[in-house]
Image (cartoon, rainbow, N blue to C red; front, side, top):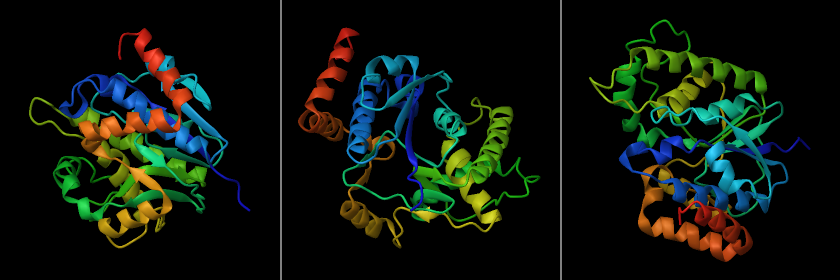
Length: 275
């Protein structure tokens, strides 16, 4: 039987504390969501590590997993950079889970080279205006496809093939440099992250004729939603997680399912005057 991949998380709270997506300060909501996600995973997996910046560390250090301090990138635009940073640190097969992913049943992450959550082709329109920007500067990149027609949702993103991971990191940094060099927010505000990560990965894999393992492998979003319910997987992607009913449900589940850890996290927040 193949080695079970370790589960990793990353949290740099600077973006979500500084109006990412024009949502204001979502620090408390993110702390509770991260705690609930990790505690669900702790029911099923042994090797879990959270990489948290110094601010987040103060509120999550007590969780029943390895918690490691990382530096904040202090970047509200490339807000998922910490995810790339911690993926680069890995020396064995791993799966990165986003902080809004909840695994309510044991999922056996069995894959060959790379695993992602699902194909995002039904949401491809979100990528197209962003691609118009990047396509101006990527003509010399041999792997790049100006209009691939799909990308991968990376709420789950894991690598067993660490050489492939390294190739992804290389093209990520290349595209990030292009964005930083050419982006002018005075002309237009571009949200680059889904291209830097999700489309970029899809283009690289397509170039090498590699088909990733899909956690949710059905034909469309509706069928994938049904599959997710069946396997006990939830990803509250995007701004939906900040709806008041969902915020309250996350805190309520943390309180009901993990009362000891809820009290520990809430007490830490109260000491800093956040609750």
